[in-house]
Image (cartoon, rainbow, N blue to C red; front, side, top):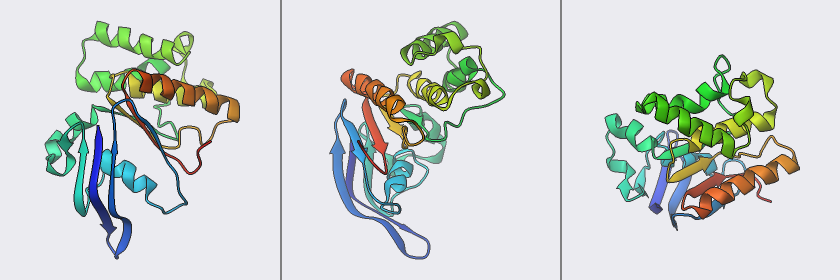
Length: 198
């Protein structure tokens, strides 16, 4: 599913974020990356989502060498990755339903199929009853679950979660991590750069 082979990333000015990093993550595996600020966790996320390219080495996701992906194919590759952001990144002027539907709208999914998948994703995270609500009316935990529903609605083989429980209380954190564990059980690889892991 994910393979890093002697990956290095050097930023302008000579800062080395990663040096000769090699590892693999199998389908259905759930991985946490921990480390201090500046250890390279965000760089890993950016390499996986094609925001950055490695200075040296190769990054493969689902047998695709990301270094060889041309700019015009980046959106297509990203459709196979569900992203969950710590700050949710919801569109506050759209309903919960519309926020979750966004990846399907961009992909050109038929309206009826998209509606079915959006409602299934919202049901999975326990928010089907809030589909018409504005994100501003939701708690932080509910907003995070909307972000998770948006990440899974396209049924991606890989979910990347950037500190998905960083702003949540312990009880909500446990619920979110149980959701990720369920995704891993059906073969979705879950990747979470995290400052701490409990």
